Length: 345
Ligand code: KG4
Ligand code: ZN
Image: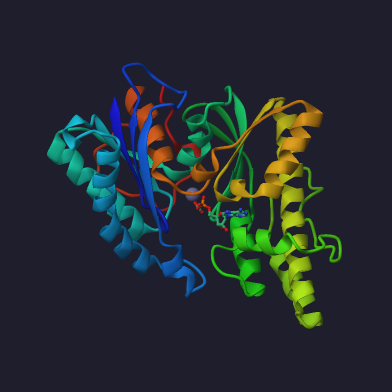
């Protein structure tokens, strides 16, 4: 089964072609080619994503990227068995670009188009590596729009264990980056500046660290950073120390809640997915905990942490291979809970 994946939910146009062979494949080894166009430099001047500009750029990029991956993968459009596109959640106009291209191509080729949940794509992205997790697993989904802990019982069977009550972890990174005069996206910028900083000089709050639930709250962190900045002149050292302190606070909370989720569920496999999963301090901290506490940890390859077409193609393959969930309907769902997905088997 050969599937084209199209991701246009936010500011990356991602396209991939995936060959699952004849049998169901949850090993994720069939990626033939993928390509990505990042709009980061286009949005940088505005300090965040401008939805209208994002949609227009997706329109410009998506067809050349499709041609590129088909030729890199050595296949023709006529060889495709299905098309997977991100149906939501995301920016409505941006989602519509991927959905309409998918629907149009699928109609022309006489094949199904399947709408994929963006977070299911992230959740399954570690399966694209050579070391897939075993079911059931706990997933820490940390992106610019979401911070959630999910129990994954099977593909399509997701139970929400906890989530952020306000800002997502990536959003906190992005807002703190803005306060520190850094560019967008903020996560990598804060992390880089923090490398030369002292994480202990400012003790920033760890919101909800001790709460008995598995929820998060990150909005107070940017306020704490702002308070420090108002109290003292922002010299270079202060900025670096604040970046290091903010990263340490976010990593502490994400780590503690992930460990609590493993304990509550008595599950020994943790998957970390989404853009913030690219953070090297979060990775090394969780890997250290995994070594000492004896649980297995799985990350997507770095190139599949942030938005990409490969995870959408792969999630689409699993849905197209396993039955229902197939839909050629031309709809997008800018708001969509992961728990509302239908199981695939
Ligand atoms: O998953 P993603 O690419 O897009 C969404 O679906 O939101 O995640 C983007 C988010 C941004 O907030 C960005 O600042 C954050 O992921 N991010 C990072 C790192 N790389 C990306 N945060 C911390 N450290 C990083 N290395
Ligand atoms: Zn994402």
